[in-house]
Length: 291
Length: 291
Image (cartoon, rainbow over all chains, first blue to last red; front, side, top):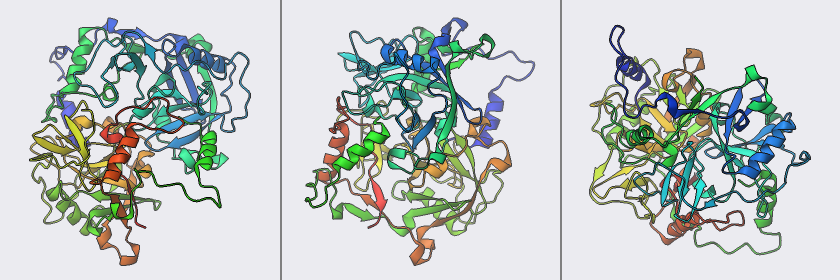
């Protein structure tokens, strides 16, 4: 942990001095075409009481039935007036209808198929050098989703900020009306047991810094503790000029492979012992505001 | 993610019904002698403005020189009036003297030896079945500290709640006056690059739920954002009747090995696909209030 004040000095020193040329790009730097626009109907915008917003990139390719439900819920404005009702330290923040009594909109399927893992070839393009305790291999899809495989099936991994669908005991798979995001160490034991439907790409601090619930599983005990949700919308539901635009970084190129290598072996002045490896959840593929 | 309301039902069902005998102990249950008292001079008590307290178990066996400094700082009441001045999402909360101008007490060594790793045999007694991306093997010391090894040296791992010593660029090793704790996914790339000196065993929510700093590295930009620290004391400095007492769970017994196995393959009704493994930071050895 670099001390912050000195860190500021170090960062200042690393910046190009006025009048000098900018430093040459690193092999791990993305080029413009590596940044790809995330479609408006794959971005979910949560507006919390107080005005802070949380932006979620959806994963329709991996959980099509659950994401279809989520789109219908957003289009029906179903979440408006619901709340964040559970915050469990080092685990999850969860939102939706705390009373579990609000009827689902028509066309929302209460229990879609279990979209937990997929057979067939591993779609990751950047694999890491070592296995982890949960998988034989981990890597990223070309469009930046974190994946693991045992050689037979592949699945999304429960990294920080990933968004999943709360469910009751099987055969329930959850409708998508109750969602959570990971706000602690990756609970990878949930992988393959629950549908992951997206990732918070901006604004997670408005969920991760909430007071922890003191009820069972971190549920707020008092109604007054719940954080009201003003609205949840797909970006595609918003007026054109209010839509947020984000880009993901494509991973199917040598620049991303170099970025992974750089994370495996950090080479700045602070690190004396390079790790020689990196865990999938310490290598989440970058997403940024569109430029 | 079990929906919380149904979870309450499930928990209620699992509790013994009045008039019936209690369920038989699981092989993973600790027996009384597995719980060992943590000495008073290995417990640090931080009292924050507002009265909330954070309890840290110190690791003098692993970082003796840094812990010696920390004891001197507590005995000199050096932290009283300092603050939590940095909270970076998915990373760390850091405290001490935000101005970095307060002189250290006499006898505190500015840069102790680099207590980052140790040669010799691996002291872990419970090893996991699979390597992780950062180490050939992980496990616990007999007294519950999370460890990793490459076969040549061993080191403490940067799991959630572990406490480390902020430092400047080497040869600085940090005095221990500026400390941080992990409040996000384990930044294992810091392993072997920094001194770990303890673990938050209770009260981390008072740090992890703080507003995130908007300055570089999560530093609070305004002095008014800092959370004042009223006092930091070793339990041994407190009057006898005010000392908190905690117990760690010993790991050098078959019950703890069974506990690890149970975490590798969760068997309750919620989990359909057991993970078949567990990462060291998802298996932090339990610590509890003394009974």
